[in-house]
Amino acid sequence: MKLKMMLFTLAFIFLANVASAFTIKYYNKDSKNYTMEVKSNGSTQEVEFRSSTSGSSTIQTSASEVEINTSCGWVKVKNGAKVIIKDGCITVE
Image (cartoon, rainbow, N blue to C red; front, side, top):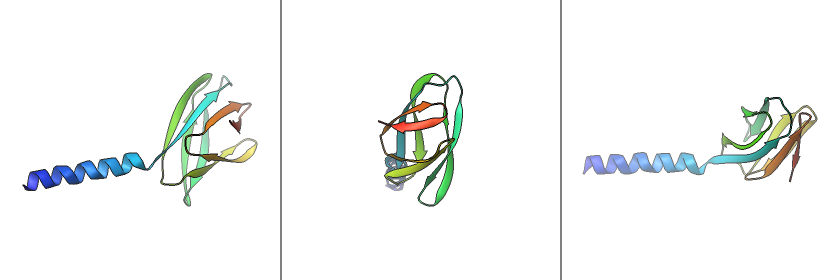
């Protein structure tokens, strides 16, 4: 019984962490990797965008919107948004 309860608790914690992930789908047109600062809920993290590729980056936050610091200034991005990186700047589709 204790083992069953412990497994249930661990599964719940895992699902809670997965549910709080923020995903940014991106296409980096530049031939340069970028590491950009991301603000959400008062905390700061870094996210990496790989060069000349499309992909997705995940940020651990419960926010529905984050701000990304680019060479062109801060850009607000909503969860699941698709962004394009060109010349170090982000545009949201």
